[in-house]
Image (cartoon, rainbow, N blue to C red; front, side, top):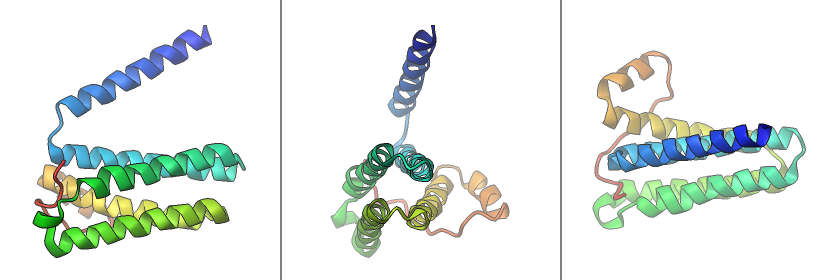
Length: 153
């Protein structure tokens, strides 16, 4: 019975994500990528604390994939100019820090990358919902910079 429930929950989650992606704007897709990377890093941290090396490595690999293929891959170098180049460098830095966190079993490196991703996500949230971003800033959200013309998703 548990297998049936697990399968049903996984199917529901997959359908929910697929539905969200189908109706999402490019900005919303970027936010979804940030959310996915942040969740993968949180999973990696839990697995690191549990000394589950295989699951930790898989979660870190997932986060790196999202950062490299999703976020960095969506940058438009031509339209992005200096900010796009800086974001690309930051994504590369994040991926490198995640690889080191995996090799060194260092949760502080996971936290560092997660904090960077949260700050960038806050900026994108502000693009999607400017009033919601004002509420987030008022609640001591991390400071952020934003721009609208750098993702090409």
